[in-house]
Image (cartoon, rainbow, N blue to C red):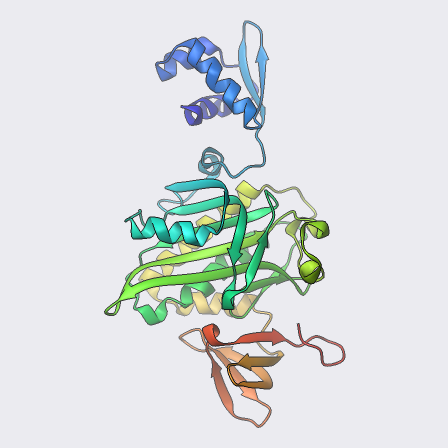
Length: 332
């Protein structure tokens, strides 16, 4: 009901919409309309009431409400089913629970805050309230299980293209699942899979994007390595608009992968990479080595030329990789 009221108000722009008109359109009483308007105001919508003329939507809150996402979403199926929570432990955990219950392909789980956001290799992800975009999508692809890791690369391309459409922002992808801005961490992506007998039941792609967090929002240990879009953007943007752009990119790239394979996705990934061509330090179970990141192969594995000239393929789930910093041989 409130979604329809917002659609009517948005459709009239700055022209008032009478309570009577809304009640007739929705088939409810004017009292019911008034109550819904009050609820919307409590949620942060600035709705002006003009005596004897009606209501005008002046401003929407910077919240990731389903009705706000739907108002600017351009996808055909991705994100058309939304689970919204103010605070969760992890959107990936919720997404997996819903996937196990048989949710729709393309389900979007989005939260304003995560209490226990997850990163790769069991690392945490700091997710302050309404200071970022913390979301997961459920996909049910016909890929082989060994191709699931490519979904991380696909998601990274979708995110970096959307982020870089904001003036003043130029981010790059750090293999395998981070996006950096000015050498600092902007985005983390975690892909999890449920599969059996050579068949993927579902893939959950979780993404955390720092959009407008301040240094004081982070603990001391990550304050110097984290960055937000708002730190460098030279134009205004909204979290809802950025999320809608990401979902559209993700749907387009996913459909391309279904029809053309992953080769076009990997080509785009290379264009946005800040890892390829760099000296790297690879930390793997039982060994650490240095080398140069040459390329990614058709499976999305990083090809590193070690200092002794030997080529090594790095498996994302087993290692950490850090591009070399410019000074003193340090690594980020």
